[in-house]
Length: 156
Image (tube, rainbow, N blue to C red; front, side):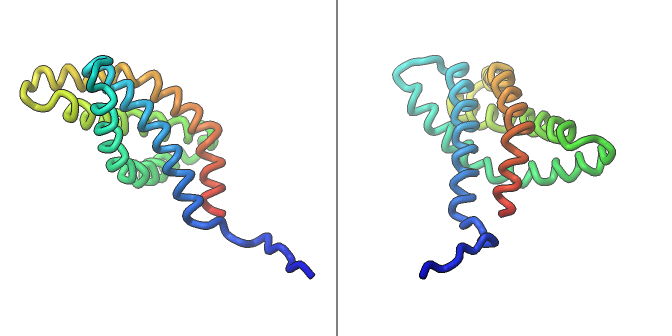
């Protein structure tokens, strides 16, 4: 006789971690790819430059997850009478700008270095602005569709 299926069982932590890692990889990989292309163009070293920038971004992303939790709480307190979609859009917009500026910093440091502060600042600004439309598009998709589903999944 088969044992009854326990509908209250929790999703294994490894599955939750893999989902979050997958989302972080797609977002971080696409954004650092654009930023690397803006800084060094498509040449012989593009893939190695992108990979090292991507790995640096992956190291920074857990801090981004903590930051997202703090920003979500702050926005909920700041806009208590606003619906969840609007709060998610505000949270996503702030997160997109903050995380992209951090990723632009690490990508520019990785690809251009700090030998010239003017070159570094120009590289950071151009890579940030070039990736901003993609980051904002990802933010809208994440905030309105994926984030609520992921939150439910992570709570299961």
